Length: 258
Length: 258
Image (cartoon, rainbow over all chains, first blue to last red; front, side, top):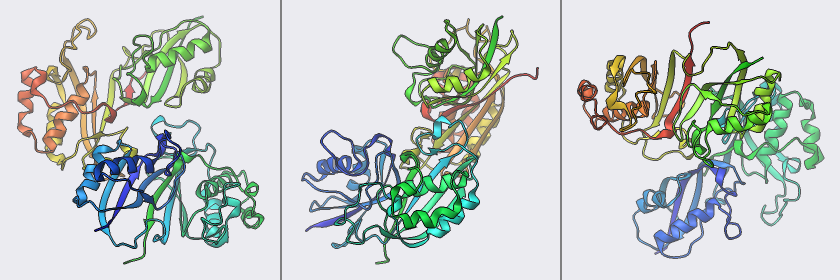
């Protein structure tokens, strides 16, 4: 009987070319999981993830699923899988789920967090897990702009140039809905900040371009009043810089109650 | 005129074989600093550090010094030096100091911190900066033992076997004084703990062996009452495991007021 196994996992993206399987020889999270799971299950399989994080991006709670007919206990897919994976990928949980569950298509929302540091010298132990964007940061204009981004908009200006793929987006183009946004100091890191976005879907590099733009606004390099114009432009060049990948974390994938 | 330059620096020890210069080709913090400073100063020089951290050990505030006659402004040894170093070593400050200052011999105390994590699965983003020692941890017996270690003792049992070098210890053998010890939860990491030791000097691997022993006691693997016997044994085999290097941080070097 075919089983659908749902995994909850965390990873440090530093050493990987992102989530998605690439050409032979490029380390990706998906390929690492598939290789290890094929050893456990003894048959070829595909691991589907809730989101395709880019190179260097981290996840605190990615959800993924795969299909198998082996009768192994679930610990084979948590403890057993961890024993085959490098320590920069950790399975936090494995459960049996219903046949029509799909980690990506069943998700109704995701929360991404962008962590950044604004002092001049980056502490070595933080450099892999925060964007380094030096310059005095005022959260008030940043929050004002983040509040204006809540709602349903065409986010073309916040999408990596040339990445649109209409088929993959299910025909909704660059229209996405942000339900919640925030910008808060990291309590234990002086001059460290987190920007959080909860949305029903995210375009390629959308979180990093929003973060880069909002940080420029908080640092006074760009007026807070310009956000309506940036959205209206539907042009990547209207927005700010793409914040570095290392500060981005997939924090949560949300599914409707069963 | 000869100048003595005092540096304050932080480093991520993950990629290094420790502080001290080794054979050609082995990356060490000292060698990285000397190579970069020789480029800046144009003459051979030696960088002396306050402590010789082992492979994989980190520093939040190491103090070091070197001698030069070049008239460069101090920013050459902070910003300038940072531009030549890899981002896992960062100069936090450079100042001119008096001719008889020595980063190691002038220091009157050092504070080391050992961070560890006791849950079963290690979060990938913490794995390089905390020891992973799974098992429920009770801080009460750990604190009791740490309090007993305060004072002047022969710490032979907490020294890496075979590392005694009487000349290097200035004749005081394995006698050291711990002024303060503590064990506190890390506020932002559930089941993360910090053990801090302030002492006038530390034997090879002393902090890691004390941490390993104290963690075993907090996890009920060793009785708290045994600490007097461990000290009295003057034998490495009497103490517990050497906690992994990645959890250890040199947190502060203390000098007498000038």
